[in-house]
Image (cartoon, rainbow, N blue to C red; front, side, top):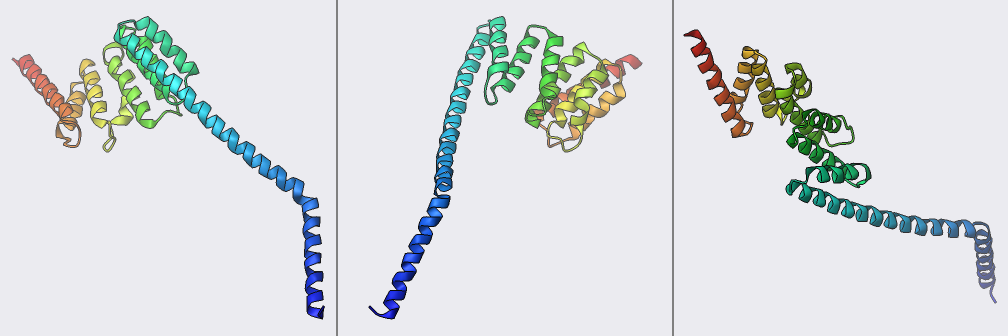
Length: 223
């Protein structure tokens, strides 16, 4: 055996012994880590399956509530939606809140409807767009049942230029102002909508109708 061959064998034996020493020291840790990864992955997959299954059940419950509402079984629908609000998964509790508010409005429980819409509007976990919709829905109810300040509290911040809901916000503020006898404010708000080409055409049309009505009323009053 040459010296070089002997040296290579010695080096290989040393490396082998070092690997055995490393494994004896760190093997249990490496195995434990691998097991933890497997358990963690299995747990995540199981959780995702549970979450999706629960969301599917909530979806079925929501559809059932809508069917009850469509059959004019309002109280039964509200009961089903209330259960979904507290026990539902995913976005269904929020959708249940909004639908409950609408049903309360249909039942002429305006105070209950406003309270329900306000609850959605105050939910920081809800998407901003839905919170804004809830503010507007409450504001439209309050045109008839509340004061101008009640409406403004919910809609005024949405009426600013650039806000995607400014048209509806100006409209509800204009209606509340007109009802409160604040004609100048109403004219200003409806004129803003009439001149805003970026908002939906139906909002501009209603704004022009209200402006014509106010001008006609003013002309009649002067005769």
